[in-house]
Image (cartoon, rainbow over all chains, first blue to last red; front, side):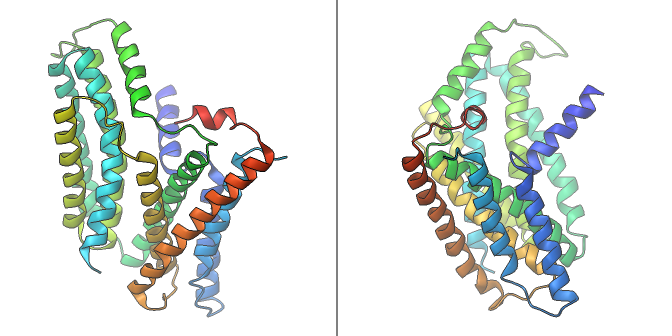
Length: 67
Length: 256
């Protein structure tokens, strides 16, 4: 059981890393891009870069001390 | 697309991983014994080659749209994590990865561990240390080679970039017989983070159905924009740190 846990923990750390919210942002951004593109007919090429920048900024904000 | 950006990105990413693996291998070889260290390295390289040989061709059978969506998401997440660490290190919120101190830590642990023969290996500790070091750092290399190579339909070019990085780092390591402490690792990670995030965002969005203005040429704009935004975050955190005057969070300092 411990080996399975360690295996899972390794892959979680490998793929997701220190902040799971970054991954959540990207997955949500891709989903929204797909919905806008396929359902609303909007060529939303600009959305994912904006989401990526927001994810990085949010993650950095949370990782550093505030006043 | 020209293969040169692909080769260069893979080269720099793999060089960073190879430098970290070299530090561990040197610690095992110099402190314990070289024969068991080389055995550990060789077994890890065989495992990595097997993973590449199985996963590499298999992934190319996926439909291109699905491949770009999944791989783009993984690369963007991976790249943002690299960028996050690089920005935190550049602004002093996280300790710089120091190959000299990493080497000393490994040497100190290797000196105190007992020598034990197992499964035909004369020093099991040196074997496992080298095996784990090469395998774990190598997995990131394999991930980058397969994802970049498969998306560009040019795994050969990605392998060339990775192999060149490993050869350059190994030859340099043999020449200096010490960890490569002079290499600006954080800035290399910063650059790789920018490339992984840019390519991941580009392919991920394509997989989600968008058409980029200018097609592949959009990357020529996306890469500098990601770089500029990341640099902007460095300036933001530096100015914020000056205003707050607080030390780095302990958890960030201690994690690798």
